[in-house]
Image (tube, rainbow, N blue to C red; front, side, top):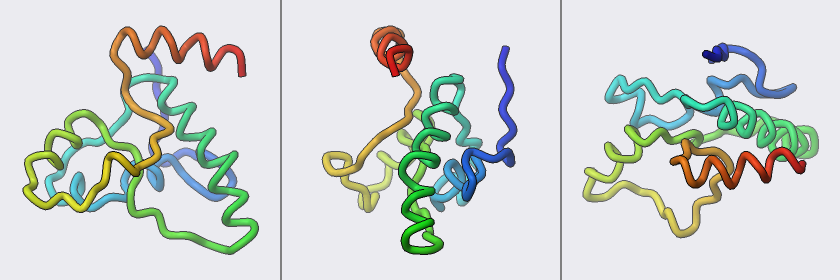
Length: 112
């Protein structure tokens, strides 16, 4: 069993809470939108460290409006007739995986 602290630092400028609780839907519906797999927590940290921190360093503070989306949150958003999302355009760095995806990405991450 693993444990991550939602208020722990994901990078120099961001906590895990910044990356997980930045959307309003989960908060509005009081949904616990937490990653279940360690690789997802590591991917969130990598996103913040490799992409978001350099952006903040270059341009100053940013406001995140969309972050981690658990399967439960995705189902809730899908029920909304006008969800204001564009899955075809969204860039996803971390998500909960099924067994096939986990196997593939686990191998990929080991090479990095």
